[in-house]
Amino acid sequence: MQQYAGGWQLLLPNAGDACTHAGNRHVFHGEGSLAPWDWATDGDTLILRLDFFSLPLTMTRRLRLDGDLLTIAESLTNTSVRPVELVWGQHPGFGGALLDGPARLTSGARRITVDSRTRYLRAEHESDWPYTETATGERVDLRTPLEGQPGMAYLRDFTSGWAGLTQARIADRLSVTQSQVARIEKKGYEAYTLTTLRRYVQASGQDFRLEITIIHVPRQEHVAESSGVAGG
Image (cartoon, rainbow, N blue to C red):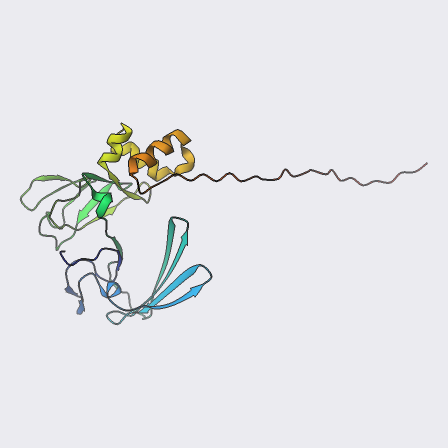
């Protein structure tokens, strides 16, 4: 971890330690995180493509940036006639100002399953989110990031497909709970007043500012049309 550069890695077809599965050797975090991808552009969209060596797979990724919103669309094709078992995940790295102090993970998941290769947590343990157990049987609340301990688990049974990471100090500055901050970030800015948004941006620090754009929509004139025959 001392040499980890951060960023956002695609984990495919493996996540976590290198392993052998179904006779195939997989590198740490999978071939997709290490292999060079072919790329092209289509307007404001970046298109990435990789034909995998470790498994008969082809993936296409389409990345599009709209303001501060990054949309990633991925498609995966099995190029063989046999089923393929794999892990397909995302590995965004968070650090710096975002983790300047206690942070809290939130999610729409209802259940959690620990990976079989995890050492710190109880391997293959299933439980209700956000609680699980360590290998020694101690209860762990996974809403609080593990300090200095690696752990891999799978969230499932989602009521809605989302996850968030919130700073405790933002909640303190707003005088609300971290769950309320997570709801602000989940629902989207259009659901809140300008006063709430100003307080949220101020609490986020000096690197953020609130910009508001007012767009004038010309009024459309409605013209009634009729037809008929007049005679006299």
